[in-house]
Image 1 (cartoon, helix red, strand yellow):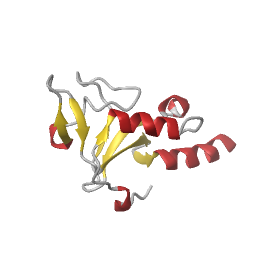
Image 2 (spheres, one colour):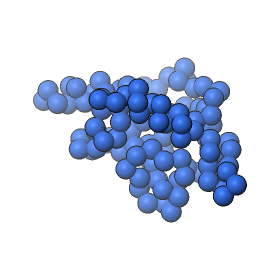
Image 3 (cartoon, helix red, strand yellow):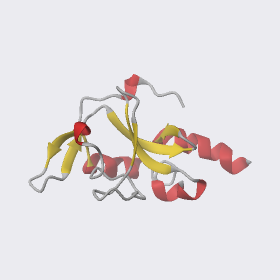
Length: 118
C-alpha cells in the first residue's frame, strides 16, 4: 500500500499511544487479535525512511502484538532507567505486514473486509 508522509507526527510513539490506538480500532482488523488469523504480522514503519520493522520482544523473538522493546536504538527517543524504550520517533507508525507489504491499521481494516468476502 502507498504510505503518505502525512502520517508523520512530531509526537513520540509510546505504549500509551499504542493502547489508545487499540481502543480506537477495537472490533476491527486494525488490531492484532482480529487479523492474526489472516496472516498479518504486527510491525512498525518509519515514514521518513520507509524501513519496516516487525514487532519483536527485547530478546528478538517475534511479538504477537506491537511491542516497542525490540525496535532498533536509532528509533528510540526516550529510554527508561532500565534501558527499555519509553518512546520512539514520531515518524514511526504501527501497522502490519502481510506478504511483504506494510499496511496501516486503517488499511488492514479495509483490506480484510474484501479478503473475507472472497
